[in-house]
Length: 159
Image (tube, rainbow, N blue to C red; front, top):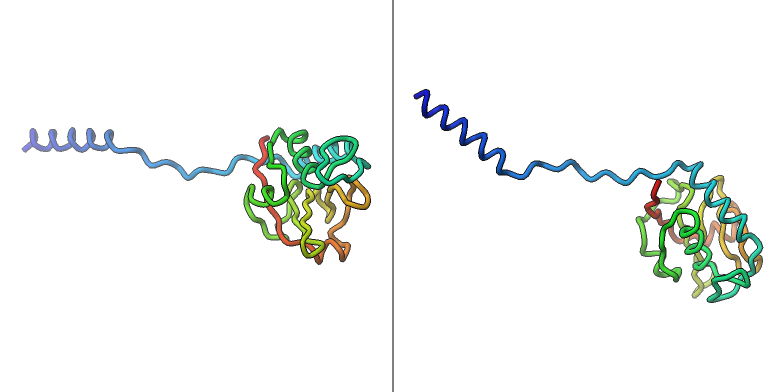
């Protein structure tokens, strides 16, 4: 009986080694603090503030909203985003507006066909390339922006 019990224990241990260990759930990548994100975005904004709006533009001579967002994420975080507003709206994960954090993309439909994108920086403020003011800062408390906000996306950011 002792010999059979010993063999059973050895077989049990051997089979335990042969199975795949359970993996811990994949944790989300650590995100920089809200203050760190806001500081990086402020630095990008300082470099581009006042750049005129130009549809399809992507330079100091002029840029559109999606080019500014693309440039801000590349310069501020080393993150490559797609070029168009529509494609940017498919990146990351959807977030409820009450959970806004600096670095979240804000999507607007200010006119029936037009789409617009900006980056939340905290305190109800966002940065974007406005058709009338170029690269600027605006407030979500403004009725125009609050009424046209259609979605929020959170992009994974490296530390």
